[in-house]
Length: 232
Ligand SMILES: Nc1ncnc2c1ncn2[C@@H]1O[C@H](COP(=O)(O)OP(=O)(O)OP(=O)(O)O)[C@@H](O)[C@H]1O
Ligand SMILES: [Mg+2]
Picture (cartoon, rainbow, N blue to C red):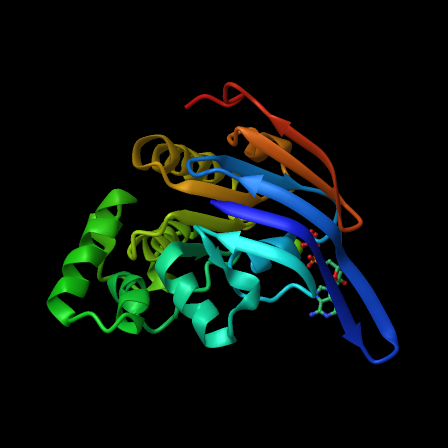
């Protein structure tokens, strides 16, 4: 599903150059649950943003579900992102003045879907994350864990094949963090959604079945497991 070959990312600002990713190659199959770990500044978010079609690599090739993404224009890239990818961020990125359900509808508005269909799909997505009784609440009227579940409903509403999450439990306490991971496990096991998450926490990483470790822009370890270490 994801095929990355000899990928590099160079950031240039003035005289300073940072090689955030150095000649990385990875394949991720459909249905995998991958956790990316590594020290601060090792290139985890850079890699996730490239996988998520939010950014271009400097060098190398990237194929997503058979599409050569590295050759696409920014607008084509956002089309691909809208179709295949759901993004989840550490700080939820919800629009504060919009209710939960309106936040969830946003990706469908970009697809030009009519209002009734949008409502129906958004309600279903909120049900999947257990928030059917909070649909008309504003983000400020929800707990952190609930806000992150709204963000996940928004990521799910367009039926993506992949969910990408950058430190999704970073702003949550342990209990909400494990609830979120249980939801990811369910989406992965029951709905076959591919998940790639970045985390600093071993415990959270262990919900995945494969762990990639980045150091200084390079993959230093790639461990695949038969079983989850964390069972839910
Ligand atoms: N827009 C940018 N311009 C210039 N340099 C950047 C930019 N974004 C990231 N970098 C640099 O690239 C390197 C990798 O950054 P990245 O954000 O991918 O790290 P990370 O592993 O996600 O770190 P953290 O765990 O702190 O989130 C860092 O050295 C960073 O300073
Ligand atoms: Mg980061």
